[in-house]
Image 1 (cartoon, rainbow, N blue to C red):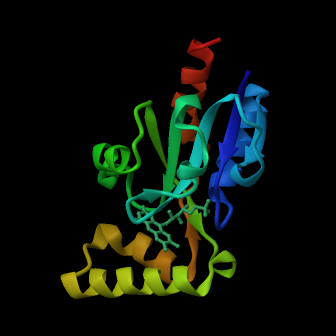
Image 2: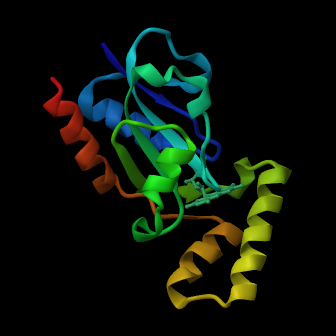
Length: 157
Ligand SMILES: Cc1cc2nc3c(=O)[nH]c(=O)nc-3n(C[C@H](O)[C@H](O)[C@H](O)COP(=O)(O)O)c2cc1C
């Protein structure tokens, strides 16, 4: 059986995982409470170059990994993130949201540091929506990102 497993701090990776579960009728679990011994599609949020939570699942059970981040799709360094996190299965990237109420003080401090670096480097107008979302919260969620994952799951059935 295939299951869907997610790690999520501010809720968008969970939103995508649950949306895929309702499209595919697969069962969905938080990473902290997933059953052993099942093949899975994993959803994890991007914290710098780390896919949070992926270290808590059996890598031999991964079928695909969905990485949820804020940046533009074109800026997602797929190969580096796959190498850094030891991922050897298909990787899909989808844009999430930031709900600052659900971030801890450390996360907020890291985001502030990233924002300061962006400002110091000179903010590209295309980066402004991402900058604003990091400072104030915001969403880039779109369920179109799930289409290719759904096709992948369908091709395995
Ligand atoms: C501390 C921190 C670091 C982050 N680093 C990145 C990053 O390197 N690249 C990126 O695209 N998004 C980054 N983000 C944005 C999150 O990946 C994004 O908000 C994601 O949608 C969060 O998923 P969640 O809602 O499931 O927690 C970062 C967010 C936080 C709080």
